[in-house]
Length: 147
Image 1 (cartoon, one colour):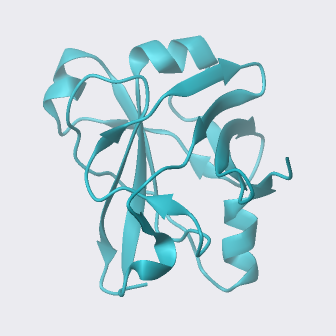
Image 2 (tube, rainbow, N blue to C red):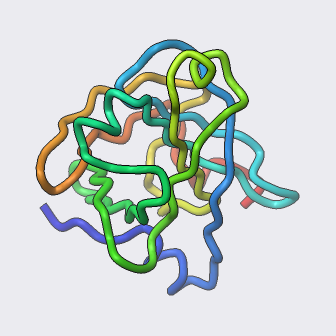
């Protein structure tokens, strides 16, 4: 498995990934969605409810990098001291009102990264290295016309 930082891949190609928030659906351990990220891009959102945050020992404000292995579509969310994305509290959903939810949103992904067409719960594994899950979806990032 050869994990590579999505943020570093994006920056090497001239993209400036940024964070933001999306909408949330049903209870989950980890969820992903895609939404319009700007005039010429889309945002890939990753949501964590409080139970997952506690298990992974992440806190609001931590910096998280997203590592990706294109061979087996494995994603690892891991804490970093600099770079990456900053975890931020999400307050605009029914789930967030019930329990705190943290979100990461990025507006660039590798061309072969699978993305869902709606909010989707994802099975994840929590280990000392971070939160690992398989990227699954009905489209790949290059299929989005507005990038």
